[in-house]
Amino acid sequence: MHAELTCTNTTVTLDASGSTFQAAASYLWNTGATTATIDVIAPGDYMVTVTDSDNGCSDAETVTVLQDITEVVASITGNAELTCTNTTVTLDASGSTSQAAASYLWSTGATTATIDVTIPGNYMVTVTDSDNGCSDAETVTVLQDITEVVASITGNAELTCTNTTVTLDASGSTFQAAASYLWSTGA
Image 1 (cartoon, rainbow, N blue to C red):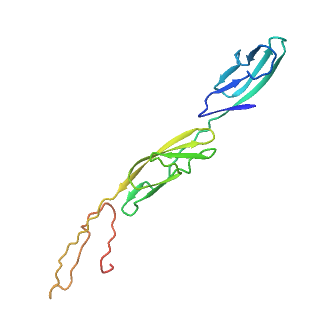
Image 2 (tube, rainbow, N blue to C red; image 1 turned 30 degrees about the vertical axis):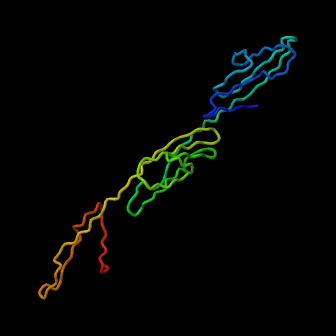
């Protein structure tokens, strides 16, 4: 027989009161306890000797208490920046480590391994191992860069008999990083 300590079950009660005897019994556990039940918080082998007080006969039984507190490591992957062209990002916690099937709880209330995000902010996921109840949380910040581009064209916009070429310049446009240009002429 065995019992198991986990992250959610941190105490195991061992009970020898169901032992068969004719009269009142006495109990002696290898921990020194003399009660019918003991609470165990550490893994190991626990033995109880039950003695029938009427005839002095006794019997011993051993139970092994196991422990499964294997940690879960939550992780979130995915592009964490919303832009004018990338209006949705997918956050994925399925790469989190767990020894059994995991459950997910996002700060949004979602319970799936992945979520789609359209609003910047902090997003947290708690990953729980369904076998031992151990859990871990991870947070990611989704940023947003939607700084507007302001196109600006400078140059003489009038063609005349003497001014047959006009140079139009859009390099004065305001933008945050490198820019690309597409003129109506295809240039």
